[in-house]
Image (cartoon, rainbow, N blue to C red; front, side, top):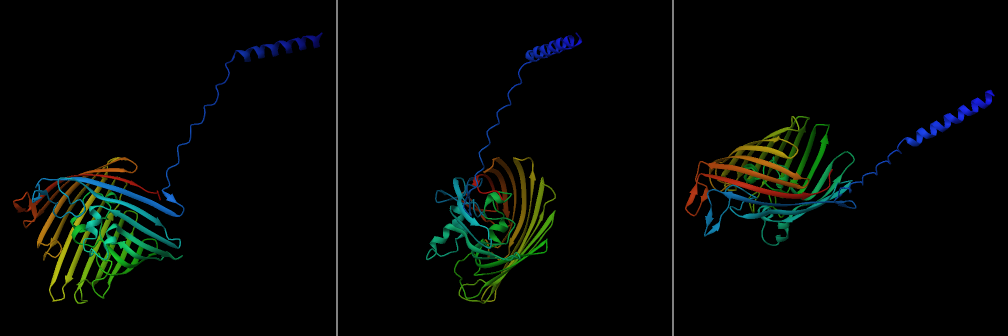
Length: 380
């Protein structure tokens, strides 16, 4: 009898449990996994990395420089030189492979910037060179010594040829008039400890593939790098007079870069150069520039720049003058690979130098520039 009651109780408990379970809603199915985002483009083919850019601009010049009914140029500018018209600064494609131990880099392009870079090259037999910014091979040792041979951009200066890698859209007066753009020859660089990098260069000269004399220019590089401050030094010396090794040109270029935070960076750049001519005369130019970058957000940045340049003998700009400029640049990165800059710049000199309409020269110039840059490349 006791067994019968236990069996009946167990059956009732099982039935009740089953009924309770049937009253509960079925568990919701697990959500389907979101489709994986498409992989970012590698911009590489085998061991070769590809990158490039297109840089266009319009610069409004309040002096309205005009020569023979044609819009003139912005005085002291070097790449966005065309006034009051839309223009292409450069379109460029880069192919490169980091030395491991052999590497190379080739930068090919066209546009107003390339014409200016190679303005001192003869039209023949080096007309092909006008489309080359850099072309060199690299060898790197296990100790970190790297040697490049070919055409490469100068180590001097706080700015570079590509506007997207600078803080301002227009280049400084020092970049345009105090230093070279590129060299052809051999350069070496080696790290010494964790904070110093040294280098030696032996090149044909300033901005030439083929030397204009039998001498060579020597470049010495010494860079100190810390967490919050870096100090870069460059010294170039060698004969630069055509057809003779008499009379050397000397350039000392130094930049101090301050990087206290992601929100604020700044630099000071100083240049001093002296050209000794074959007849015993000489010319001197020197100047200082300072700039800062305020990163307002992940999209927007603001960059002021102020500089002074003294072309004592008119060797560099063609006029013996002391010039100054102040620039303020507003930057917006709409998305990865798109960069826009709106810039106001005021230049003034102690001599009439800037074209005003067709009436002649005045001592100052005001411009507003809008630059738009599209670029691509691998993320390292």
